[in-house]
Length: 131
Image (tube, rainbow, N blue to C red; front, side, top):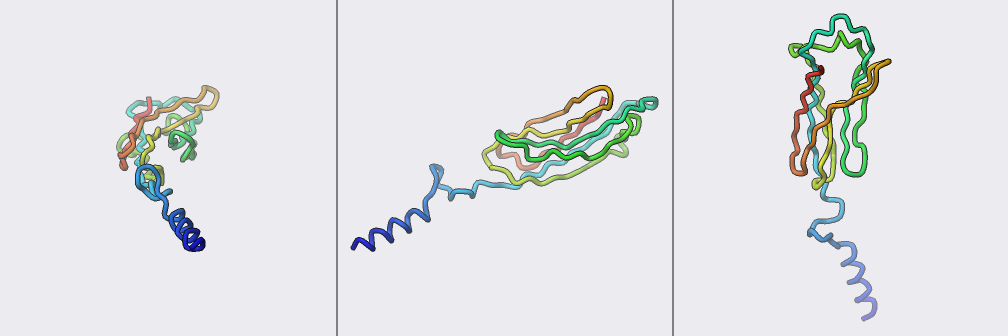
């Protein structure tokens, strides 16, 4: 009898659910982010180097922080030649995200263009017209 109770307890512990009725670890979803970068400005005489990075973060950690290109400011493409990069991240389905571009202009400083992605939104386009 004692062995049967122990086996039943062991079986129940392996099939435990969290408060939401989901199996632990099963709340992950794929979230697709399309990053679009271009400018509508004429920076024809700006020879500063600029480095753009893709960025995404949830409430606890950075999910993506990846440099995509170093170029002269005057070389940032126009809307007709925009840079488009798609990333798929596996995240907690209940987490809001912050995502966008960070950039560093050599000798000038750092800045960013970030947007929010609420929980439940699994596709997002982040379009940045650099100014």
